[in-house]
Image 1 (cartoon, rainbow, N blue to C red):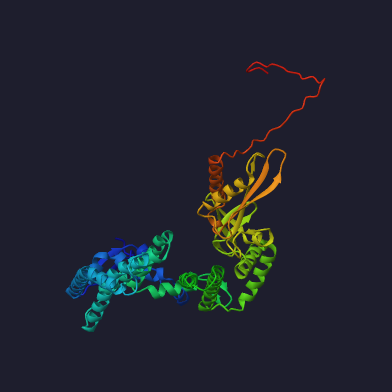
Image 2: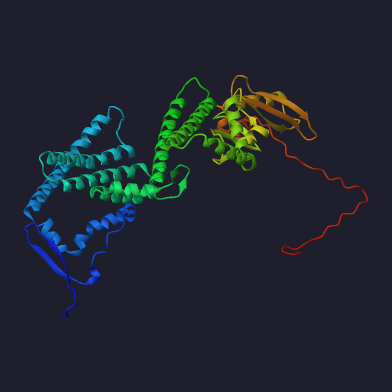
Length: 484
């Protein structure tokens, strides 16, 4: 070695008082400490890198000084035993907790099933484990023993419980990403750097007024909005179910009340979300102006249908279970919404008719004020037929159909003495037009046909007479089969 050569060594002192050194090159010398300004702006990754530097530089010496000493090893073994014991107790107590929860829930929900109940059952195991670990951590700290490993295990148990809750509250596509995020933050919390990570995440992002749109703010906004909207949706469904069970309220008024409650609750959820995030509600004035311009130019049809739906629900001109006719389509109104009405025809086709069409176009409501409907059908008999007998047979045939009303009774009429036959008409009433008109008409005609056949009354066929004047010529051409 030359005289002016310099040898560098890096040493670490163990708990036994001995120094452990190794030779290093000049390039491996630690860098000078950063200035105060740089240290203040260092992120959590820089702090973590600085904390892990002794482990990376001299793993054997760090392990001997921090892990293999009796003062470190024995407390670690005690904490491992506590964690294992908490796991065993949680495994035994989880079935008992689920059984106790089922017994308690039977007082409110029968049977206690469904996605929400299954999610509550899945939370019992992680919740019991977390409570046991937190209790063990408190006991260890109270006795003056280290409890770092128990704290880490408790943090991971809380993350496990949160992931179980996420799988129930969020759609399947969000469950895996949210689970990964929860595990990452649980690890940060376990190593005691969660506060620094949150402070760093809150400081990054573009400025917006007096605040910063940071990842923490975005997550807080999404969580707050999801919470209030979920609560509004759940409460609106419960209230709509309660409104639908009101016996003395018209169906259209029930629908109007249910939709008004739903819109009001969702608007309240938006206002509460903005207030919870500290966003001034005066900003809604700008949003309302922009929304008004958009409604005026691009959403005229939607707003028209919405207002028409409110009109239909309030004036009760069309109600659920009404039989209506629109554009030669006859069907039963199954539901009324704020944008369209669902009408199901007799062939099972469901038509979604915009509310504006029901307000502005001609609509025949067969059951608006009274469900009784009069139907009529014409038929022809020969001039040689006993007219009074034919009318009586028509009325008897109509009375024999179960759906035909006896009051007012079926009536037969002579409508016209035609060139070839006498025109008759049978008129009868029904009170269930939603069950179809063609089928009951068919039953009436079949019954009349049976009465006519039994009494020798024929229905004449239409015929045409061709008059050939004298002296005229008729050209007849014989065409072979298949010829042109």
